[in-house]
Length: 323
Image (cartoon, rainbow, N blue to C red; front, side, top):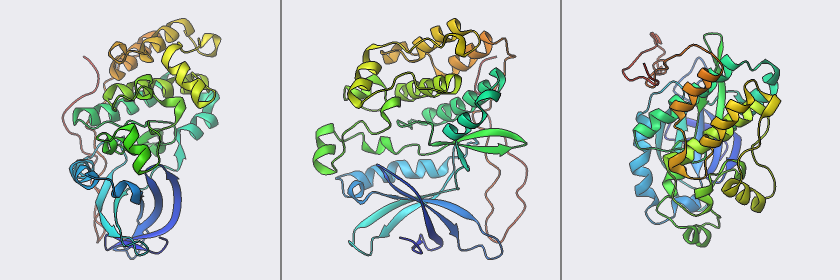
């Protein structure tokens, strides 16, 4: 795929990573002559593209993703179909702005000793705002983890950017048996340390899965460890039947935080706290001032060739939080 032109002007230059959904490459927009405009190009696994009804499902979801403009969500700038020269099959692709240079996992590991309650509050509020924006448009993530959240610097401060929305949702029409027969996957897709208990039971992805993943991420940010570890089978049992271990002296206000985590990581989806309530409760526990984070804060406008003025950061209506 290296040096392949995608969508007429996106040139694939190097591989960034692989997962169950395909391969992500770093490329550039060839319409720019004087400066390099990098992009991330995801070529979806050809086995997915061949699933009955998959193309129709993608045609429904991809335009929604391409229309999004939310500050804490990695922006999709193009989507389409290309021909695989080797197999002759049609491959679907998504083109995004390049992700941040550091994953949330690497960031937490690097600044662990500097993670003040105020900074933790800001990080989880940004993730929550991204989830809220997507959920209001009936798109779930379904595979939120520490590696598809990346970090950027905005106005001199660390800021998150969530990637890969909607990919798990593309698979919802297919049962576990269909997955295994057609593409060899065992569902649920995702990293076992983050998978909600109902997904292990074979239930379809839902907004409550994102809440559970959010809880695992918060637990890791606070403690530097996952609530549950072990083999795949051990993780199924732990997620399904065990409460998260107490954070104890690892964090300030450990007992209050642990009570909140039990509700956030509840085995019953309907018993989980919302991500908004978690952010509010975290600030209450740590005696931090209340804030309201705009769910619909947008990116600076995309530049189009020839380069123009980026303009000011736009603000749209809609707020995350409570008055």
